[in-house]
Structures are given as C-alpha cells and as structure tokens.
Length: 472
Image (cartoon, rainbow, N blue to C red):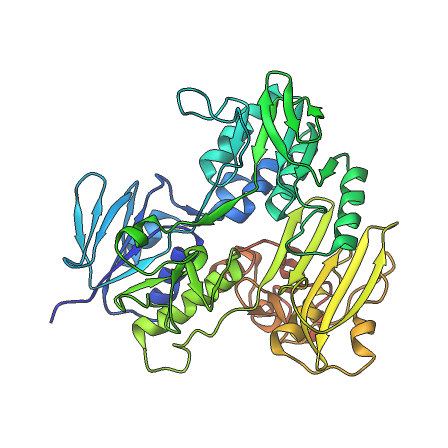
C-alpha cells in the first residue's frame, strides 16, 4: 500500500508548526513542503526586532533545511505554485513541475495591499525607491539597507505592525512619523482612550503621530496628507492593508470569502482533501492574523491527519492574544475588546502611559486590553483562556496599579500559561535546563517573543516557588 502524499503549500510559521506536529505524531505519509521564498522558514513577527537591532537574522530561523531532511520531509525552497489541479490531484509549479497529492494544505498566509496613494508606483510598475513594504525578510533587508542614508521616515498605518516598525526606525535614529487614517492608533484592538495613551507614549519616545488623516500623494517634496500638510521624508514604509492569500484557492474552484472557508477539521467545504490554516483560512466567518491561532490550528490539523477520530481533531475557533513587541511599548490585546459584549472594568493613567480594560460577561473575562504595565498579563491570559468565573471584586483587583520598582511578581503555578503563542505552561518551562532547550522542545519564545523574559526566569527551576515576573 502506497503512502499518503501530503503536500503543504507555504513554508511560513503555520506550515512549519504543522510539520513539527506531524513529525511528533509520527504521521505515516510522505510530506512535501513547497516554499516560494529562497531561504528557510523564519519568524515574521520578529522582523521588526531585526530592524530595531535587538535580534539577529539567525534568531529568526524556525527550522533549517537540514531539520526537514533529517525527518524525511521533502522541503523545496523557491518553489512557487502556479496552479492546483484538483481533478488530477497535482500542484503545478511555475517551472512546470507537477507534484501529485492525496491531501493538500494551503498555508499561504497573507499578502500586503497598496493603499490608494498616488506616486507609490513608478511608470515602470515598480515601487518608488523611497517606498518600502514590510512583510517579508526581503522587505526587511531592503529597508535596513536604506536606513543608513536616511534621516526621516513616515510609516503609513497605525496598527500593531506599524507601531513596531515606527519604534524600530526611531531607535535606529530616524525622525519617524506615523500616519493613521482612523481616529486613533490600534483602532481595531483598542478604544479611543487606549489609542490616546499610545499616542502620548510614542511622542515621549520621539515619534510623532497623525491620526484621522490619510496620505494621498507621494511627491518630490514629501508625502502629502488629505488635510494639505506635507511630511518631508526619505522613506515611506507601508504597513496598512493586507488580505489572505487566496488566489490559488479561488483558481482551483474552492469556496472563498475573505479566506478559504473551512470546516471543523480545517478542510475546505468544497473539497475535503484540501485543508487551509493560518492567515489564509476562514472559520466561522472569521480570519485570524496572529500566530497563536495558526499554531493551534496546526495542532488540530496534525491530529486530523494522523488520528481523525481523536477528540482533539476538531477545531472550534481560537481565542486571540496579540502582543506588540517594541522597545518602550508594551501592549497586549485579548480577544476583541471593541466588539465583545459585557461589563467594562477600566483603569487609565495617561501620565505614566498605562491603560487597562477588561470586558467581563457572567463573571468571565471575554476580552481585554493592557497598555503600559503588563505585570499581570500572564494571570489575566490564563483566566481568559480558561473562562474562569471571577468574583465581583476580582476584575478590578486584576487592574491594580503597577508594581513598585524592584517588587517581584506573583508566583506562577505550574499550570499557568506562559507562552500564549505555543500554549506552554510554567511547569513545562521549569523542567527545561536552558532557554535553548525550552525553545527546541516547547517552541516557547519563537512566536511573538513576548514571553522571553519570563522563560529566562523559569528555566531550570525545580519548584513552583522559583518563578517570578510576568508572562507573555
């Protein structure tokens, strides 16, 4: 009997996690991974940290090609898929190579979209030399190459990525400004008060912010806004706008709305042989743009492919926990605090740059925003993930003032989740002898990186009492 042929289109964070899960579960089939970029899989979330200078390029690599080979996985880099032939059961590459499959997984991620700004694209169809996207490693390297000869930069987009890039450029010594069309920063994740706190914090850090205005034209004089103001700049970095990469799925006749519509086993509702996960998948009329849901989906799909009758082979949606990683800016968002229904508990101190908000329904935290001090993010995330019912006074107690300088944080029990991206508990980390072992065996710190400081404190500790600090 021939082995099942599994082809994974994409070699990003979701695809790599799926392969790791399949290897751990001893998937009996033959795995082929098709990555259109020339290099190994890397952590896109930490690109801004490389730009800032806090991480090296080597720190981004998720799995080297040698790892795939050692586990019998056929990894093909620079292999762009042109077409999926469902009738023949083949994926055709741009060079004409046809690769047969019995099952296929789409892990194609998302692609940036150009905002409607005149002058971004030259007559030859190429981006202006001043203009930079920031999605891939190639984008990051190109921008890094332009930074030494620049003095001023404008970041278009005040979302999580935009703020990370703006902070990185400011740290690199550029006079950086942010343009956001919404009335406040992080408008999809936080309310107006939270946006105002962020704006004030960025200004203190040396980054000017313009909200409620849109860039309309790039000229020799600079970037013109719709209020007539012109921002002088050497660099324009585009971080606003993106959509799931679904062109292959659409051309193959799969049902696509915003993303590839999948069922509880992450299979296309059009063809059960084809699955989708990560940014390109749509479940329950929702797409996700964060690593934690993608990794959760990878774990479920690995069980679907190896043990389809197991209880874990069912996907019912994910609870998002997003972190902003940038020097001097601390933000965590749980769920959808601007759309969630419930009673709001809120504490704001713009003078010190903190804003905390919990949405509570039936005593359960259903969403939240933490800006500034994140000393309690681990505990709050644990309560949120578990749906723990709190007493009437407890939500307010969770939002108490910052810890005094030098005061240690609460001890974390072994079952407390430390790494929200990989779902790693404090107990698992205490059993590791080094950060390297924790990274290799649990994948902690390889997502958003927000848990790194806590992981360093926990590794090698034999008892629950050895833990201190916050979780990410």
